Length: 247
Ligand code: NAI
Image (tube, rainbow, N blue to C red; front, side, top):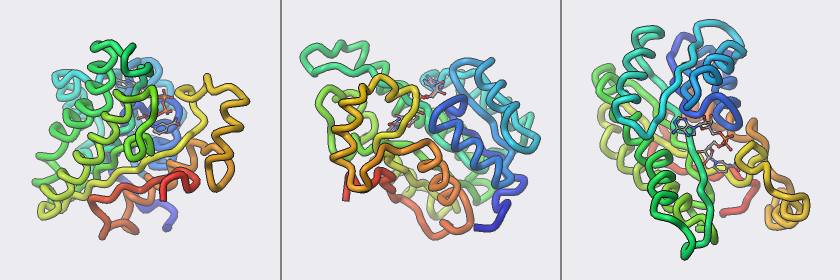
């Protein structure tokens, strides 16, 4: 991997204010990209952008579940930083419960952010990518979308949906020079998984062939690779980054 293989490109990372998204924003900035950090909270997004290495980064508050907010934000990013060449759909939420206790609003909230959010952002950036015949889209799915998980029917469905979305976008846009791939993280230490108790974490570790939970940096390096020239012949793939849970 060359030192700054994404020099001068504009990358938009949703959910880039913390956790996996923040690590992805850092990795893309280290590769030379100007990063638009998008998160629900504008102050959090701006603070995260200000801490990225290099300059030319900006933070934006936006709810990805809203098509209007996404269109407006992408317009602002393109006016401030230039055309978006790399889109990382990382924003995601959980509303876990057993199926019989899961409320319709919990189903809708998770699908609206995790799946429909990606639809909105992809729609907002692809016209420009197709015109320039150049662009990369990376969706952050989950191993749970490949394996299922008791208590996460809404979340697993949203992530499985992202896999189908990824492959369809890849097929539809390949001839226009746009690549679309997904990463499927296993269990990664972030705020999202912070309430795993020690006993639970230990039991989980037993089920992971590499015998440890992942860190955000385990994901960000793979996203950097998929965004760059080393992955120029890869599209429509789902790469599990999970210590070997799914093989
Ligand atoms: P996190 O909870 O630490 O961070 C989530 C980020 O998404 C935050 O920046 C938040 O502002 C943003 N976000 C949430 N709802 C949003 C909305 N409506 N509009 C805009 N931004 C919104 O989560 P974490 O763990 O960093 O997860 C990142 C992604 O990785 C998610 O898509 C998650 O489903 C996925 N993932 C995480 C795993 C883990 O073990 N932590 C495992 C597999 C996938």
